[in-house]
Image (cartoon, rainbow over all chains, first blue to last red; front, side):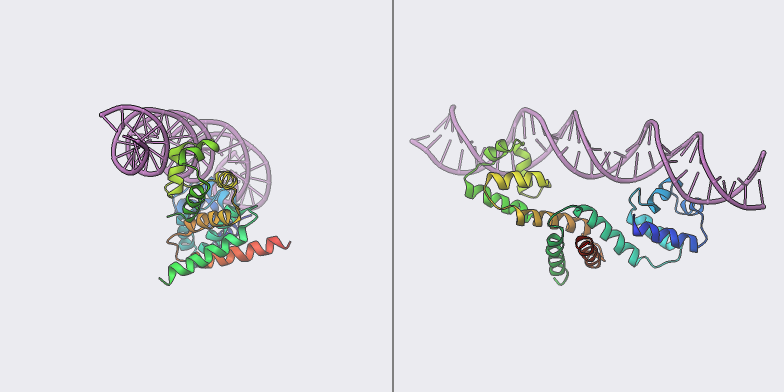
Length: 98
Length: 98
DNA sequence: TATGTGTTGACTAATTTTGTCAAAGGTAAT
DNA sequence: ATTACCTTTGACAAAATTAGTCAACACATA
């Protein structure tokens, strides 16, 4: 299951939006939002930002978890996943302070 | 530029294969291999394994770099890329010793 | 019944990825 | 200057993935 989906579902409920209302508010199909919240379809970053905004929630953690899920998806069942992450991290750090 | 591409090009030359010969040997179009080595097209893991085998080279580092590149590609220009990697790493470690 | 909730599946459209091919331009042999 | 290689390029089509649309379903409540 998607933690981003679960988080956004919780946020939605706390903010008092029905699935339909939320979907309409960000101009998207209800079916898709339903599927996204349950991890049956992938979120786009744009959707996440729109929803966070709608629910008046901070989006940082959502985006981080979103990206993390994307990365883990690429690495699923890879023997060297962890090693790859470490190389990527090193690379990214290097790029950053440059 | 792709380090996997560069690595595989070096390996190929050291192994004495022309681009054509290598491509034929693994049953792929020369044009594509040329582009892959120069990072213009993405490798598939299968291609990497086939080539490493052909060149009698160890594939571990190649695969790790390949995955790392894929991950970095997903994260390019992301403000929270590093944070996402850390979350992913933690998650992966957890999954592993389970 | 009527209204609101979320879910499902079938279908199409759009986008991205992958594969095929022909031609170009380079180098070297001689 | 022709032959025989080599690598690169770009145009195009095919295939696969992802995204969007829509109608209907099941459930609950008023």
